[in-house]
Every structure is written in structure tokens, then in C-alpha cells.
Length: 372
Image (cartoon, rainbow, N blue to C red; front, side, top):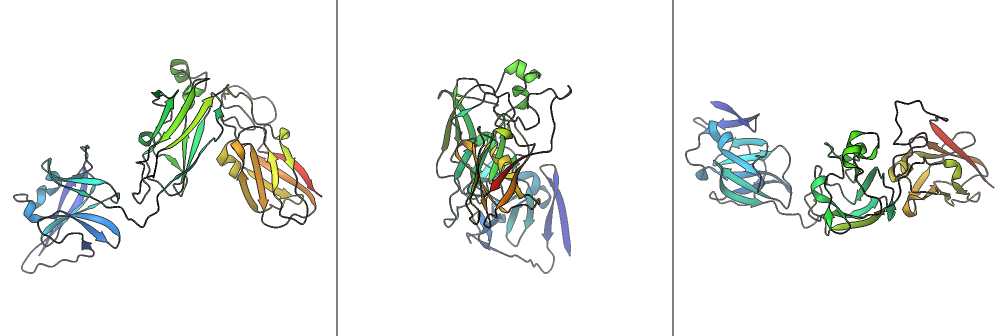
């Protein structure tokens, strides 16, 4: 006879199979880190920690239907149990979390809010250490109305960590709170290697109440340091090797849209794969430069190749996949391309959108050049 008992865990229902009768049998895939029936142990499936095994001898007097209320797995210094599923095995209670355990972290096993055991999920020594590759913008001077920054990592990182792991320090003295928006979920690329952080737009736009009440997130003339703490872990639980710091000072407000007509284009030679180099005359948005610029020939055939961004995001370099033919070409730029203050090719970020716009509004802007 099989009996299934259900009980709530953290206000959600979780199933507890209790299998008993004349014949006791169970299917268990995996292995345990420790074999002693007196010790809490990690359950492994291959190289992945999938659960925590608690010997039933350590749970005297606890009935099957009270396990969810009395037995909790949680991180130290927290009061919120980890969501998961409990099941009764031959001689142990097995807990499997909804979200996989993080390597390198310690977890507490608590019975009736008393600590029964603390167990650490070991790091995999064969894994590579994540690194911060860069913080954009890379310029040592940013506008007062800087809108966002990008952080590039060498490996996929854990989400939901940014406001805890990233600090902004002003004039080497004060840690500044509430510089970045608390966005949930955070703005990651699909690979979780590029994080976008927005400074509070409500404090940047001068006609909005947050700006009037608190002012801009940054102060003109002040120096700042972005600090990324080394205890930020990647998705495999490996922390950064070191703290990462980047310094910058704050200049004047940027109240002009980028102007493609001012770009200086250095053309390549025909029958070569020499790069096309464009001097942008100002620092522009790194990610948008990578995605909003295309090259095509006079017949509108897109030229395949790679875009690289040069010093302080003021240089765009296009490296073609095949040699250039002699002829006329076009640089096509989507109007969404922005500078560091969020001003795009059509309008200023600080513009009141309720008022009619002036000037020409385009979807794309074009510049021609000749390969000869």
C-alpha cells in the first residue's frame, strides 16, 4: 500500500511520498557524500549537488505530516527557508531544492528553528574563475546625466546580486545608496555575461519630481569609484578572484544628440580586408554601437563582418568577412543609437515627450563612402 502525504512549505504545496507496507522498496539514483547514518550529507548526481540527506535517527518524534513545518534548509543569517521537496527514503529524509544549491555556500539544517547541522557545498576545483572583463563606459569622464552602465563578465553570473555586490563610492569616502534602479528581474543578456544597470531616470529628467526632490544621482565635479565585490559568484558557484574597481569623474550635462554627419570615415582599400574605421567624435553607448550599425553596398546587400569598439567608445571598427570590392557603400545607423546620456539620434532623453517634436525624425541615418 502506498500513501502520499502533502504539506505546505513556505506557503506552497510540496509532495512528501511515504512508502510503507509489507514490502518496502524505493528507487534512488545518485550517491551520498557520507555513508554514516548519523550524519547529514550531500546527495550527488554525477558532479552536481542535488539534495541534502538527513538520517531519520536525527529526527525523533517528528511525524511525516509535520516535516514541512519543522524541518527547514536555509542560508545562515536568514529566516526564509529554501523552497524544495522532501521525501522519505529507507532511513533518511531527503530534501531537494527547487533552485539548485550554490557551490561554495554553507546551508543550515534546522529542526523547530534549532540548528541541527551546517553543511557546505564544495567548489569544483576544475572550474575556471570568473572575471570582470570591463565596465562601460570606459571613459574617465562621464556626463552629469549618465544614464546606464554595462558590466561584462567572462562567465555567466548569478542573478539578483547586483545591488548587494556593486558599490558606488564618492570622493573615496562615501558609499552612495540608490544610484542604480532596483530592477527585478535584472537586465542580463541571454548568456548572463552582460549586466545593464540604469541610473534612476526619474532623477535624471529635470522636470520630474524625483529630480526636484533628490537631484541627479551623480554630482558634477565629483570623483567616483565603482566597486564590484569579489564574493559575487558565477552560476557554478565560483566567486570572482578579486574585487574590481573603476574610477571616473563627472563632467557637464550632455544636452546634444549624437550627429552622424560629424563622423569621420576612414575608408579601406579594394581587394583587401582592411577594416573600416569611423571616428564618432564622442563616447556612445557600447551595446547599441554593436547592434544598431550596419554596412551595406549600393545594391543594399549587407556586408558581413565584425564590429569592434575602440578607445572610450569613440571609435567603431568594422572588419569585413571578405575582401572589399571597389564601389559605393553605406553606413546605416538606427535612430535608437544613444550617447552616454541616453540622447538618441532623434531626440534628447530629457525631452518632454508631451510636447511636439521639432526637426526631422528618421528610423535610420545614413552616411556613404567609397572604396577605391
